[in-house]
Image 1 (cartoon, each protein chain N blue to C red):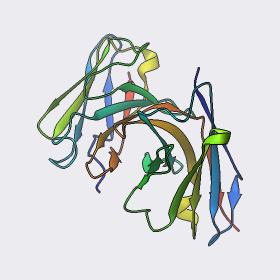
Image 2 (cartoon, each protein chain N blue to C red; image 1 turned 90 degrees about the vertical axis):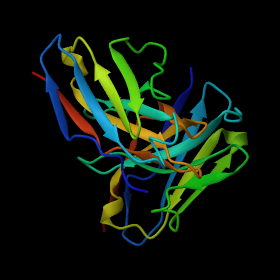
Image 3 (tube, chains in turn red, yellow; image 1 turned 135 degrees about the vertical axis):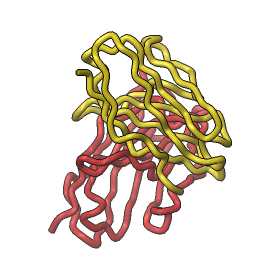
Length: 119
Length: 110
């Protein structure tokens, strides 16, 4: 059964870069019908799509975050990663990784990783 | 890219039906049959309950149904149960490899 697990620091200082990794187990990250995405949720607020990446490395981003976001994939480790630069308190959120079918819907989700931006 | 519009809250008594709307534009909801719905209980990850407007993933009860008319999609929960109390989010493919969520609706079972 496919599982996704986020990992990374729980706290990042303002102006620094947030980095998270998602490990995929139970299925291949090379499936042709799936992208691998990141979604975040600030405390008490709604969901926001950050971006999604194909196993080949093609990535698409939320236009509002595009200037600060970079996604990458390591198929040998069945992992994909998120980097968000120049963070502020507004980037404090639970960050989820998820499988993104054709960019149409997110059908499997990780448990989430709370990241707090604070000095 | 603007978030899709959902009512902040909805409610119903056990056994009743409730419908949650999700309004976008021709650029997202109205332009594609790729609306999906997610259920999120407090402290948990979202769970896909409807994909492609009206398709239910395996294991999702048929009490959950989806539809779309023009730029507005709807999620109907029939035979309300206590465990249906959760936040519900819609989302849509928005063209040009873009994807957008709704602002979320808190469903209360009275």
